[in-house]
Image 1 (tube, one colour):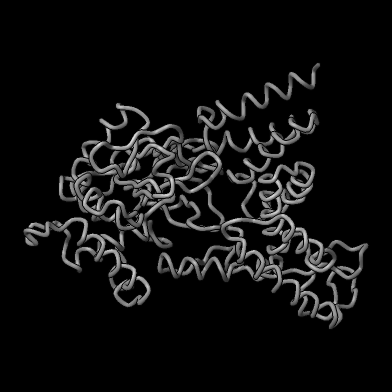
Image 2 (cartoon, helix red, strand yellow):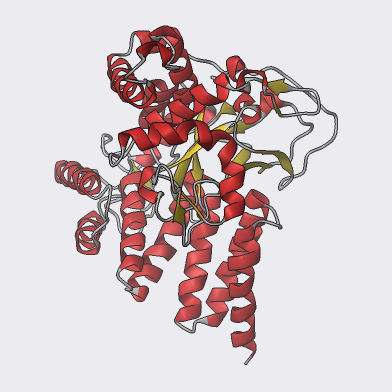
Amino acid sequence: MESSSSASTSSSKTVIKRGTRILSEKPFAYVLKSKYRLERCDNCLEAGKVLKCSNCRYVAYCNRSCQQQAWTLHKHECPFLKRVQPRIVPDAARMLCRLILRLEHGGDLERGYYTEHGSRKFRDLMSHYAEIKNDANRLEHLESLHAVLTEMMCDNKNSSSSIVPNKTELMSIYGRLITNGFNVLDAEMNSIATAIYLGVSITDHSCQPNAVATFEGNELHVHAIEDLPCLDWSKIYISYIDLLNTPAQRRADLKEHYYFLCVCSKCIDPQEMQQMNAASCPNRNCDASVNPELSECGSCGAAVTQQLRLNYEEITKLTQSSLDSMKEVAYLDMCKLCLAKQAGVLHPLNVWHVKTLDAAFEAAIDVGKWSDALTFGQQLLPGFAEYHGAWNPLLGLLHMKLGKIQLFERRYKEAVHHLQEAQRILTVTHGRDHRLLLEQLRPLMLQAKHEMSC
C-alpha cells in the first residue's frame, strides 16, 4: 500500500461505472489466523470439517484437492511447524516464514498485475525501513519474531543451514508485511487471515474511498463504489482503517501503522470532528448537533449549561471505558446502561453513541434478543451510512442482518425492504456473482417475498 499521492499511474479512457470490478487478485502469500486453524481450511479458508496434515499436525485442509494445492509451499514450512509442536506459532511469525520461503523459491520474480501492463513485484512494495528502524515498538516485535523464526527454521545440528535472512533483510520483509498486509475477511466481515497482494498494493488510502476491497475465499476483489472517468490507479482509493473513528484517531492509526498522515477532506474538515463528538441540543424540540464547548446551540440558541458539559464528559468517559472493556465480547446489559445514560446528552450521530449501538446490536444477536437487536439495528443505520458511507459492505450487511431478523419475526414487508437495500449495496461492493449474494442473500429474499405473498 502507498501513502498519499505516491502510486504510479496507469490509465484507460474507459468510463468505470459504480459496481464495476476493477481488479481480482490471488495472494502472493497468506496465513490463516491460528485461532481458526482447526475450524477452517488452511488453503481455501472455508469453514467446516477439516483434517490435519499427517506430518506437522498443525495445519488442516477440507479435502485432498486443497491439500495438494497447498503442498507447493507447505512442503517447505511443514518441518518447521512440526519442530515447534505443540506450541502455536504467532500469525506474524508464520507469515514471515511463508514470505521468506516464497522469496527463496522464486517469488522474488513474481508479478501482481493491476492493469494489462502495470504490475508490481514484492520488492516494489514500500518497506518503510527508516521509520521502523526508529520505532521502538516495531523493533521489539521484530526481535521476538526473529527469535521464533530462528527456533523454527534453524537446524540445531547445523546452524549455518538456516534460511532466516539477516536482520537488515528481515526488517525490510517485515516492513513490507506490516504496511502492505490485508486482513482477509469472511462474508460477515470477520478477519480470518492475513495476506499480501502485489497488484492491489498500488492503491492509496482515503477516508472517503471511491473503491472497496472484498474477499471470496483468499481471492481479493476491488469494486468501484463511485463512477470513475477512467481507470487511473493514482486516483483510486480504498480505506485502510476503521472509518468509525474520529479524524484524530484515524490519523493517529495511519501514522502508527502506515507512517503517513491522511490529508483527505474528511480528516481536515473541522465539522467532521465536531459532529463525531457532538452533544444533543438541550432543547428537546431541536435535533441539531451541539458543540459542548460553545455557549449555545447554533440552530435554536438553547443554552449549553455547565451541568450539560459535566454530564457529557462523564458519559463519554464511561462509554469509552465500557467499549474498551468489551473489545472481545460485548455485553448487552453494559451496552444498555451506556445507551440509557447517553440519551439526551450525546447526539444520535455522536461516534461513541454509534459505536455503543453497534456493540449492543451484536450483543443482542448473540443472546437471541431479537426485539432489542431490531431496535438497536434500526437506530444504527444513520450512523453507519454517515461514517462508513452509502456504499460500504458493513452497511449492506447491517441491512441484511435486519432483514434476516425481521423474516424470523414474521415481519415480512420490513424484511423485504432491508434485504432489497442489502442487495442494492452488496451488488456494488461484492458483485452479483459473489457467494454472499448467491448463497445467503438471495434465498432470504425469495423466502421473504414468498411469505409476504401468502
